[in-house]
Length: 186
Image (cartoon, rainbow, N blue to C red; front, side, top):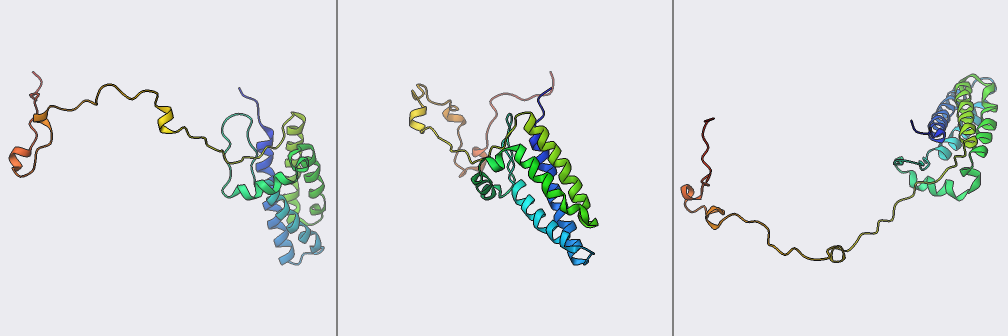
């Protein structure tokens, strides 16, 4: 069985936590809960987490499937260098971001999910994983002339002249005649 890539799981968990935190923050602000300022923080933190976690990282083995429209955010996240590519930093950042949202009910679930994502990122960091961006591949195509060393010596097979397509002036004569007799099982 292969090695588990914990960062992939942490990324999905953190993105879901960011969306839950964002939704809970909107509910807390719109509902004017007591201490709704924490809910406003939940909105800001949820947006930040979603922007940070939307770009998927490159997998060590296998194919890496990027999310739709991820390239723009990948460039932004990559620009922060070791702050975003180091999973110890991400684990600490998520752990710190989840604390203030725990003081108001609508954002508690998002904070719990974010704390779990923080633990998964910590597990990924301990195992030596780090974030690598999925960038578009620069395909180098060989030119057709260079890839063919020698042209074929024989022409492609063709049917005999009498079996080739006939002109449709004579519809009966244009029909194909099967040279092999077709009969029932003999």
